[in-house]
Every structure is written in C-alpha cells, then in structure tokens.
Length: 164
Image (cartoon, rainbow, N blue to C red; front, side, top):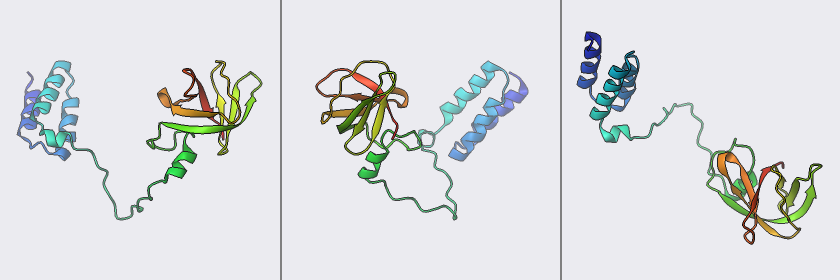
C-alpha cells in the first residue's frame, strides 16, 4: 500500500470512534482514489465503530432562536389533510372510510366522487368501477404516494387523486 494510504488508515485506527468524528473519518476514506484501498478503509472503520454510536439517530442542532414546536395535529385535521399532496408528512393514516354523497363522470369517463365531508376525489386510471350514492367506500394509501378507492364488498380498487 502507498504510504499516504497507510497513514490515513493508521490515523483512523488511532482516533476515538465518537459520533462527531465518524463524518471526518468517512470523508477521509472517501478521498482515497483506489477502489480496493477505499473499501479496506471503510471496512476497517466499520469494524472499529462502537455500535451504540453508529446506530444513534442524528439530531439537528437546536438554536436559541428556534420556534417552539407546533402542537400535535388532531385526528380531525389529519383526516381533512388525507390525500392532499405530499407537503404533509406521513401522518399514520393508511385507510379511511367515507360515505358517497355524489358521483359524476369526467369527459373521458373517469369517476369523480364527492363524499359527505366535502372531499372530492377523481379516478386517474381507466378501469370501470361502479359507485353509487350513500355507499360506504374506503380510500387507502397505495404505492409511491398513490391512493386507491375501493369497497369492502368488492375485491378490486381504482387509483384516485384528491382534487378538493
């Protein structure tokens, strides 16, 4: 190995594995150009890291001017925000039930459903799905931030997006 690489690895071995120091040590390993030597450096660093430090969650620094934390959102406000664009963090709601107040059809045949709480959802796929007024349906989270509308009495679902 090159003398510079040996010096970097020995420096890593002699330093104490503190959380603040890990970032510096990772940067030193990342600066090594040879792939094998870089991998050896990372492996040796990983072998010498205290598991309690390595698994500790990163916490942002708190400043004196930081605003006080907002109170936790109530269940009613989380229900109102369900289905809106992803500006809202994951709120823990995966499935909600609604009663259909109105069903209409878009120009290309997509279903537009208005619920008794005022929310309006529009079908974004082209599957046929029969929904009637006063029927209870659910909307659940799908893959990649999508939402699915379905009924407990029926196995199929349609992909929907909230428009209001």
